[in-house]
Length: 417
Ligand SMILES: Nc1ncnc2c1ncn2[C@@H]1O[C@H](COP(=O)(O)OP(=O)(O)OP(=O)(O)O)[C@@H](O)[C@H]1O
Ligand SMILES: [Mg+2]
Image 1 (cartoon, rainbow, N blue to C red):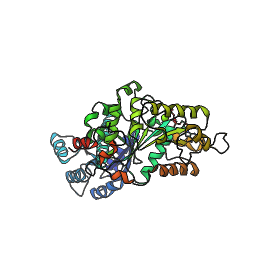
Image 2: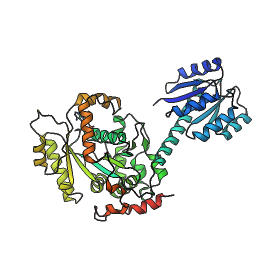
Image 3: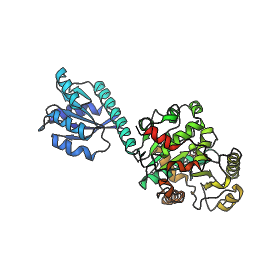
């Protein structure tokens, strides 16, 4: 995403010198220019994605250090840079004390401008992520969010697409949502959502027995559409660091903070995905209407049963890529799989997903029917309303997993710092 910059320039000459510099920067964009401190103070709250404010020392009527002080008090996540004709040690110290992130000469080269803007903007985005994640921190209420685990009956049928769409629908319904990519070797959520982020779930695995709010917010990616995302590692082999117990602790920590935790388990069983299926409130096996997928689903469900991960009748199948023209219809899928099946199905409609998939913007589904199908399934899963159990005591889910889980209340206590 391009860095968004606001410019406070007292004269047209200063404005054009700076805008000329910005024209050469591919990753930054001036989103508004202002001639007075009042305009700046009034406009900042209207630009939630603003990263950097560049203010020239001669901007008035408020003294420039007062504007910086005011901005850093009311918008601590904004990076403010003071622009000066000459960088003097005194000016630098005063600006930093007032809360600026840096001081830059108006004569700075394009390289200097680029480096300063990107450092300041990265800092601002990191801080925004911290603040947003912290605002979702709800350890005191002891509420317990709902974990929904989606596993593919075979690869490539639409498990990730469904997980992302369900997360989007729940976020739209104003629920706090975390999407977890637990497809450890080949998690591809970043390309579906056009995001780059260095941290992944394995960074949390290393500290799983003591996850703090700060660690979570460092690791989670905050998507502009409102969902928080915990990615699979960029290097698949690092997935081996994810033990079952780390997965249990991480999902427990997430469940105590988010109303909805959606886990993409991929199509292969791992220790971590088995744990997600075991402790999920809803375990979904995604099937497409073809025999290889149904056989894959049968194998997966039977394996869960053998490993005492989850009983067959506690798994629900979701049919995707459905068409009335297919030989295989929902009733047949239910019979062969022997699990309950969601009443609603996801229609086959590759075209309607094409733009969303290729632009990395999951909201760009071009067919109302498909959009509605995801909404209906989200509703059937119970993602759109608060469930009674979400206000239960956190320990109550020990019953469900035979008391094998570590105590969530323990996690919460450790977290309350
Ligand atoms: N309902 C659908 N109708 C048609 N095409 C779909 C549907 N759902 C997903 N697809 C397409 O199928 C392809 C694979 O989707 P996706 O990556 O979500 O599947 P997956 O099961 O997660 O695959 P993987 O095994 O690689 O993780 C994508 O091109 C996606 O657009
Ligand atoms: Mg996938």
